[in-house]
Length: 422
Ligand code: EPS
Image 1 (tube, rainbow, N blue to C red):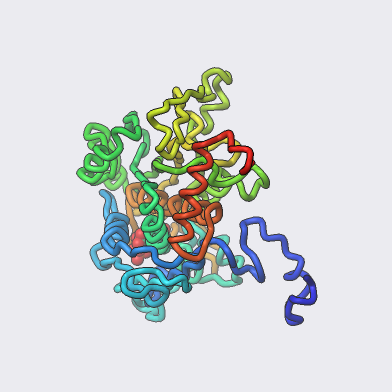
Image 2 (cartoon, protein in one colour; image 1 turned 60 degrees about the vertical axis):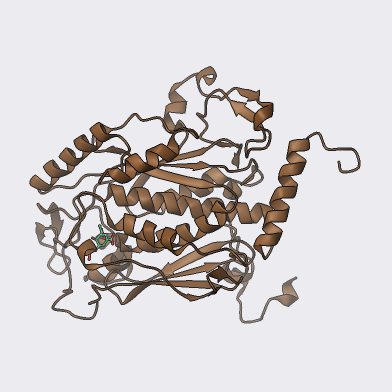
């Protein structure tokens, strides 16, 4: 009701449509959400998570392990030798469990030097492909530093922390996430990922310093990175995430902004340097006839007690979503990362102070961060799935979430519902 809105909010705020599920005055009220703050060379990265139910057990090893993985990967730059990313919990957790209060995590930046103009000089020659030029104009400055510090992919450590925290919740319901590098430059793996083989692929991926569970493809990818380094160039790639154990019905077909597909796409496109996203067959679906796109439905009584409720598919080309909702099959998302825009052999740019054509500035950077990006996407997607899960099953505590989930699954397994319930 209008009268319940405090008078210091103007009409625009009161009437604002919040398509992303964000509620009153831009603050997410009921569902799970996170926000991040911090500059690449500021004192720390900060992550604020709201809406996490109480009594989620925090798996510190999982969270810090994912942060460590994000720092790795063949082709990374010097920064990762300086940092040891770990999440310090400042609020919302007691005795290693969430308490239902806002959660703040902090990741310290050891390479903190933002106000030291000698170590972190002003930068006037924007790098093509980075946020430098657009941001400098937007904030009416010729010092690109002010934009690049926030635009830096250093911020992705925050997303990994938030996503890995969300995985602590998902894991309690048997929902697991697997991410890897599908392609790098023109090298790619054709490995097939299934509910039966993915655990074995985790080991193969972890044994590969490019995070690809295929040894031969990994070697080609390393070679691609070595070549790019020699050429003073950079290289991008394609990363893939699979989510196993999602019950049917996460997301909805009711509104475009609530569809799980649109939320997953936004999640992926929000990661630094990502330029494309596909779910299941993605763009390939447009090239095939319907008979070679849609996944035929079967039923296997012996699987009635699994997340799929016994419904089987001959294929999973849809990538686990139909009509904006999970359908009980593994969710499959791919993202395309462009090559990093800081090149050792710089591209042409313009000095913002003089307008003279000159080479783009060089900052310490990575030749390739696709491996790290696979960790970022995997965890960012995990957060969005957890958000959809909390939205569907609700409750302030894990006890309620568990009861709602179990009850829903029981009813869904029974379909058609008995008359007294229908
Ligand atoms: C990154 C940290 C950054 C970059 C990289 C990713 O550290 P620094 O700028 O101090 O070397 O290495 O960021 C970018 C590629 C970018 O374009 O900003 C990290 O922690 O992942």
